[in-house]
Length: 484
Image (cartoon, rainbow, N blue to C red; front, side):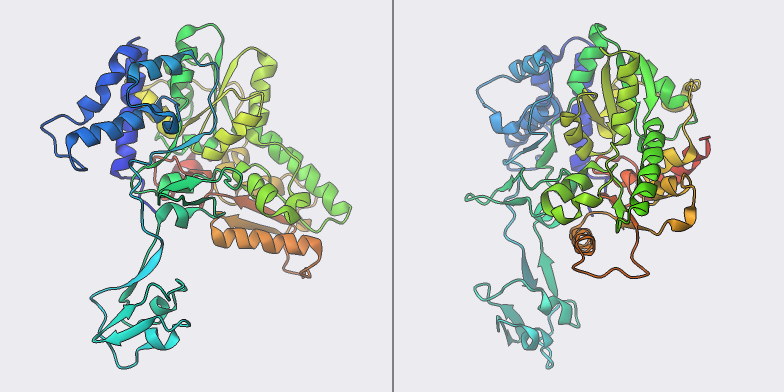
């Protein structure tokens, strides 16, 4: 897993901050042209062949942060015109992801390689266990690429760990095979397969898989003051910033939001409904039920594991219920969900109650651009405080626990978790699908409630987090304690 502290993330943050500052000063169109020059001055060390190539790549990165698909990039068109397009659009544009092909390293196909650590040993387990006889040894082992099928048995059997796997990070990270090379050797996304888990985006070392920002859109609405703008922040957001209760509310107000709602309020509604639904399903004899708050998981089932579709809870997500509350107060308000999740941005496209979705990375850039120090702000406590279990939705096990405490008879619950939808997690989903269909017999160990989180550790491990999940878990625990 790529550490969240990396140069690609730092460049993304700097571009977002620069765009936000220019927009807040009313100078986005006239100033955006200079961002690549300022970030790659002539006297700096180039990352690629030259500074001019670095600037060209930065121009396209700026495009994505303006919310524009790089696939539509025209080198002859000034960035100022793209900035005007961003300021004039009425809603975000599809698709939510864009691939920066010029930054893509065109990684070679996944393969195995023998390193200098090979001792040409007498046992030769790599050669003996290769099913295609693709390995020969002459002082050192050599792999015949034409015969190799990338089974990995050579790596598993080498006592010197001399065989390494050379992966394509984005392809390796995708749990559903939605990313592959086109005829030019560059990566492409199959959106009919994609579940928008964001793994490709967070794992690409070249930052070539990019989400299209909606920050310009949100700042525009805040500055225009034509409609009330409401921030809906996920529980995981409180685990990204070291702040006391009420300081996040104060920070959102300082940004210019007219109202702030904790999405943990929607999580409480979600847990209430799922607990009732679970009891009803068990009474009618259903084999199992799965949670539904993770939209990446729900999409994974709908596309890739249809056998499990009858088991997915019919309850909507916490984001939806919180946005509904905001719209009930003011039907014309602009709702802005903030979380660490790419899948929520996809869900927002399909939910009429949600107007925009910002990532925590974009929120941090907004705070920096406005020089807001959250820790120094006086607390602004909300009118309604959610439950601690509603706030606990953000970590693995939290949703199942929220359902458990709401059951009339907690003894009927046999809960299990799928902690991250990697390829192993997808296989577990397939197994549960076969159990539901009766193709695999259930037994006393078969769970009747399965909580599924697409991200390892839950939402605090999402693709756009800015805090190490291990640290975020502690911050979340402290935040949740303040619940009712």
